Amino acid sequence: QPRYSDLAIETALTLGCVFGMRLRQTEGLMNSVFDLMGLDIPVPDHTTLSRRAQKWKPPARRNRPLPDGPLHVLVDSTGLKMYGAGQWREEKHGARSRRKWRKLHLAVDANNGEIIAHKLTDQNTDDPSQVEPWLSQIDGG
Image 1 (cartoon, one colour):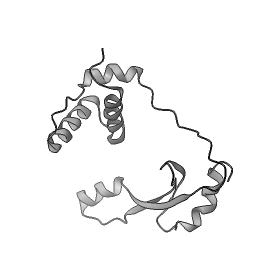
Image 2: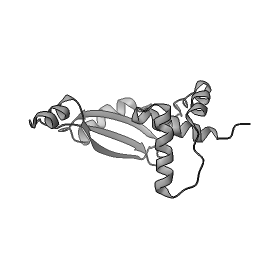
Image 3: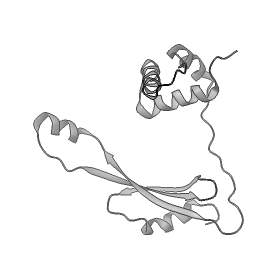
Image 4: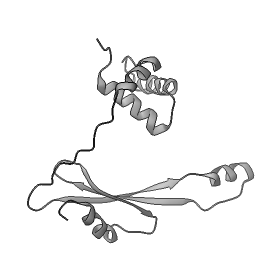
């Protein structure tokens, strides 16, 4: 009988993937987060994560057909800072480098919150200019 739910294992493995951590580090992160939140929740240990990760498959992307008729779409973008050798050089030698930013443009179905189109561009691209590329991503668009 598994002690931890599939959701608990999936959450831990996902956080580990997102932050590029090994299983022991993921276990420590989960413990720290729960301690900061004041929760007394058991955290899967690294051996349990390892064992369950062998059988775990990431959820398949849902390819739901879009509803017939008009589609209410919410559009937004967010800035993402690009990290690389420039930050190391800046700390080591004090040289200033130009910060590189990218913009992630998202189109979200207002009815269910599902991301239906996305585009990663440079920092100078605005949302309205991305409507045409989004429409080509949306089925039936």
